[in-house]
Length: 432
Length: 128
Image 1 (cartoon, each protein chain N blue to C red):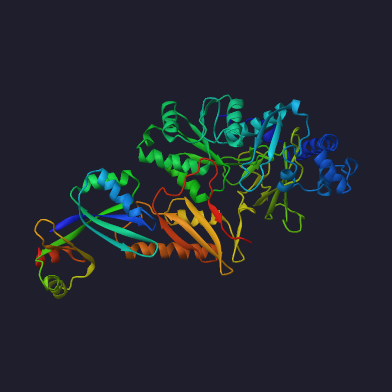
Image 2 (tube, chains in turn orange, brown):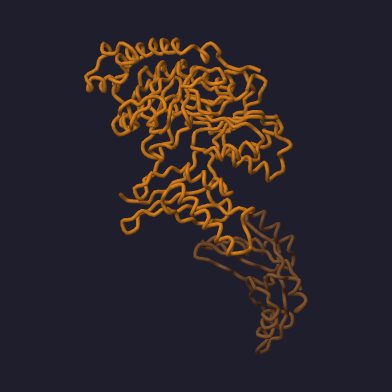
């Protein structure tokens, strides 16, 4: 079986990676200084010129970019190539504000596709596989990324996009799809539908690549058990390229960052100080060789840890642990940090679906946290006392995990919308 | 006599009960008895129907969460003290009542009592 998509790069000795990064980085800074007026202005404001940057170790002299910077410059923020050389755009969902548009040259698309092909091979795929891509296609990077990766690998690619469950299952069974790529919540939904329709014996899936939203280890185990596959995590964001910025290998202990293209730092989100490997902080990325949309020191808001230990898979790229949550997903309720992923962990532990909705409000100057949870056929009993007891158990498990009281509302099954793209799990009604 | 009762999880939301009766009506199910146990946030609708299997299938197909359990049904004459006599016998036999409700038997005007009890065998001995 093929182990790597690009063995020479993926298993490159550390010193060589460092010097490759160094070389690309210096070229990139020259490129943004010359061709990207937005970032040049930022550098000038910070009093830095390319002359101050002698190696990648000088990166800390450069200013950070935030999502707000990219929004303010809409629609051409950080554009560093003439439009005539750009071949495509993608865009963020814009759920929390103005959309960010990312531009790609053919070179940018190629390197992104390669990153996704590496992820597919790490998940056990090769050209003989049938890759079922059930991420949304369109402005969202999910569909395009894995579709491109699968083409690069030479696998038969099913560009299913999301939605229309009957058609998904028909193609999955009729064409014997072996690799599923989707959001984890959509994978869980498909698994549920496969179970309901009694199709488990007819699917040939062996692995899945799931990303674009937060999911817990418990959810992974659930999907793996329900589909009989190995489930791999993949990470990325439109601002950096899309899925495949980092990807999991068979060890499943973190995601290898494609360091030949993306340079990662962890910073303290308050002091903005760079933190050493192993410490938790905000993840910051620099694109080392993207042309059209070369973000430098982009603050992802993802809270995570970088690890440098050697990996049994042979890849030498550093790994990032699954982000604990996004600092913009993080809710501060009654002064306590709450990540939706923590709530999900408790729900799955207690035998509920990972489908839930969090409603935060402020009543009489005090925060309230309400969680809508779907009742399941397995947990339902005719005895009101037992249902109340179950609810009490869930409330105390949530209290133990979060440190604050959450009011649980049991709701009828399938009344909380399943996501085909990204789930809207949090409704914050506080007017602050 | 023992009958199968269907319990349905009921979310506290406008129209939920109607959704359930609507599913049953469309499946041409006749309700013989209905009772609701509720807390502030949710409830359980308990029903006796003429076709348990068909009703259960229809409810599950529409996404309801259901549970089917045996209950004891006792007919009592529609006169003063009717319920009192039955409850007296149950108390004397030391049988716990988890819950009960009553309904009227449309055929003869008798009252029908529906019991969920701790000891069904003993219940049947004294009231069967």
